Structure formats: structure tokens, C-alpha cells
Length: 265
Image (tube, rainbow, N blue to C red; front, top):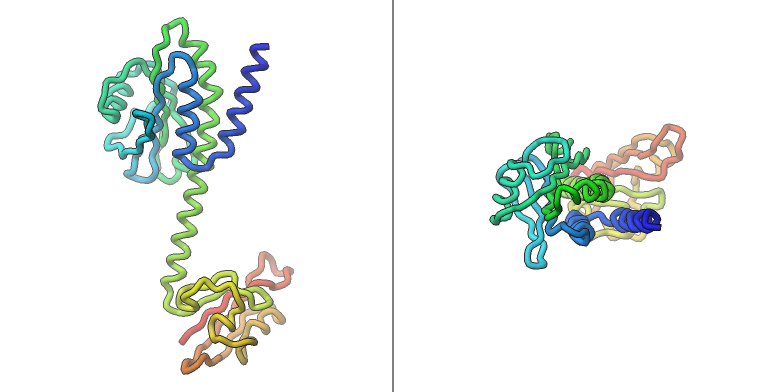
């Protein structure tokens, strides 16, 4: 009965943890879960966010604190009990004495690749357990600690993808020539600021030239028909553009449904 109850609790924990994708949410959740164990008083999470950017999450006076860490934590890859170097490191970070300590290193591949560290994260658990109480406590904790690696992996992958998307959009917007990505019906998927200052959700010819039909000599139709790169000259008000249109497809046999057009003044 007790085993079934414990299994149900762990499954519930895993379900809730798998739904989280923000590091602070993950930390707050595991803090609340782990400090519900008898003998556990505090939980801290350290990780490397990027090269030379090391962070600690800890809770104090019911508030989550996030602070930079100047000195890296010990690089041992095994679970440690009352390690002196760990205690000194954590006391330095928290600016207070640290008692008995369990240290759980985490191998998070996404972080490891970005920061070049063999040990990019560690969870510190402060406890008051006796020697007799520690073995069952550690066995219980392992079931809760191991999944945190995957939760952090997911959170950092999502953050990495988000940052990459922002960087790509900033680069895209920084190009001086107008560029847009459209479908076969001239609907805009994406356009840079030189093409349109607004966030265009309309036809490319409407956003770019204020027209109600495709620009004369627009090469996009030819791209759809031929499946190959096309170029042409079009006029927009007092300007003349050389338009280069390129087909996008995943393989040679796929019908062209997406086009990138580059407008050179």
C-alpha cells in the first residue's frame, strides 16, 4: 500500500514537472516538493546559463532569489554528502552558514554544449537527517532529482530556440534591401522592416506597393510555374527594383508553395 502511494506521488510529480518550461518555475516546483520531505530545510539550484554566466536560485523569506555566481561550484560528477568545498561554496553564495548538505550534480546536455562545462548544474539540499535517516532519504530523493535534468534540458532548449529566433529576426530586419517570404497566393509569411514597417498579414503587393493585384512583371508566378529561381524588374512609385525570387521546397519533387523575394533598389 505504501509503495503504491509513493509511486502515485512520483507519477504526479513527473506529470507536473514535464509541463514546466521556465527555469524559475522548475526551481520553485522542486523546492516546494523537496522541502515537503522531513529533514529537508532548503534547496538551491546552480547552473551555467552561458560562458562566464553562472547563476544560483535560492529561496529566502518566501521569495525566490536569482543571483550571479562569481566562483564555480566543485566539478565532481558524483552525489556528495557534507562535502566541505560544497559547503564553503554555498555559504559564500547565500551569505550565511550552511549545515549538513547533499549535493546532486546534473548533466544537462543543452547547457553542457553551450557553456563547455562538464558539470553545468547542481542541486544543493540542506538537511538535518541523522546517519540512519540518510540512506532512505537519498533513495527517495534520487527519484525526484533525476527528472530535473530533463526538465532543465527542455527549458534551456526552448530558451535557446527563442533567442535564436530573435537573433534571426534582428538580422533579417537589419538588412537594407526589402525581403519577404510569401505563399503561392501572395500571402506574407514573414517580411523585414525594409519591406514593411508594420507587421504585414496581407498580400505582398498590398503591403509593399498598395496595389490590389500582383505587381506587373512580378517573378513569383514564374517561380511557382517553373520551380526555379526567377528575376524581373518592377516599379513601386518613384523607385525601380530588381526582384530576385527563389523557390523553397524540402525536396525536388515537392510542389513549390513558398517563395523568398529579394528586392534590390
